[in-house]
Length: 125
Image (spheres, rainbow, N blue to C red):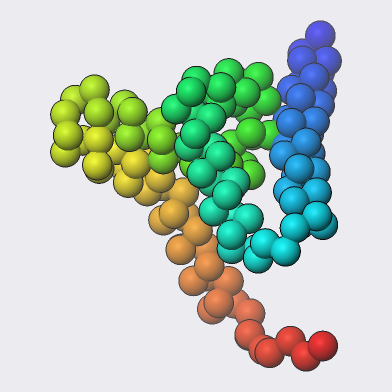
């Protein structure tokens, strides 16, 4: 029974994460938007969907399938701001920073470690 629950959790995460990535691929194929603009679009979509109350249930349903894509970062920032706003204006401004600090710190630390371990070089086409 426990293995079935884990398999179902993986399936839901894969389906939702895959759907988000499929939408991103469609946007890439059908528009002339740059990668940076698409990233911002998806992050803002996460913020807007969180503001209207639609992204929280998606996170509850799919877990990492909804939090790992860049829209999950928008969810994280918006959720931190909304929780901070309940305490006051200053916390509304610092809430997103506190919510995202662990992930951003991990990204910086692991990037530094990889830079120490591997030698970078220019990619030639």
